[in-house]
Length: 92
Image (cartoon, rainbow, N blue to C red; front, side, top):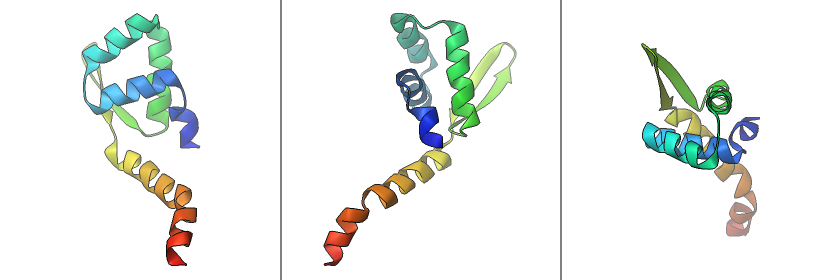
């Protein structure tokens, strides 16, 4: 399930920074946390596998792009599933 891909602290940091397109902030946050480049690559690959980000290369630079449609689908799922009790009480 997609929640497996976004449940880790590092992935949350990475994804939130990709969403605001701040690659320098990712690098700074990971340096402060002591995360190696290989660990970053692993987490980016996981986010890409979940469809939450896409990647493109330009030379040696890797660009990560947040996939907002996928994120909207996750938010919609959470709203539908987590708010069922609230909706039921409104119907009464």
